[in-house]
Length: 267
Image (cartoon, rainbow, N blue to C red; front, side, top):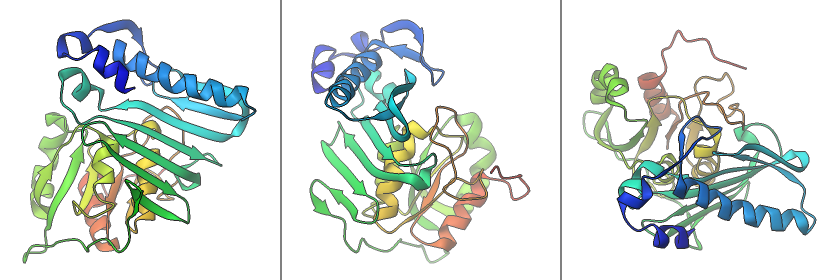
């Protein structure tokens, strides 16, 4: 995938579209297509070697490789808007799951092409950053007035931000919008930030890997559109915002920002 970016070094080259729409609903860029081709070349090789699974991917959608129960959930280029404009914060996100929901993810991998950081988690075994286990991360930081010091925020469309400004201001001191859901969520694992939320429904391909990394680092994640906080399905549709924090109290406060208390949960 690094070769794709070397071959398309400028924003003029990276904004070129293929003329097709991916299964996720976005216009497919040439760099999106080539990044996905690189990932699927590896999946094809694994399948030829005897591996059986089903791939769920940003551009191709659901692709069967002989096993409907083992899922490989991939976003080859999370933060493609950043990538096409030459902003370095974009990532590869890959998760493996032995069931249909976020709770079933057993392996998560996120590679940040901007910082060259590699985030990995295995269910029940912990999380790692560049081969260093994330042990005993710092606690969240609160201001004297009780607000979280800093969180990351995604789906930062001004039309979605505007109705939430007052609630955000009452809950958080500073916001950071990185432009990649996977990277933004991973920042909570070592408590670089005190929480993370999206202002719109997310797709599993963007968040499946990072949510396991964060949970294995001791933080909490919820998909508030579902009665089960980790009940969001591993498919291609956007179902729910994602919210994460280090404590149940802060998680509840951030959920209140993005999800009305009278909304009916799914599942």
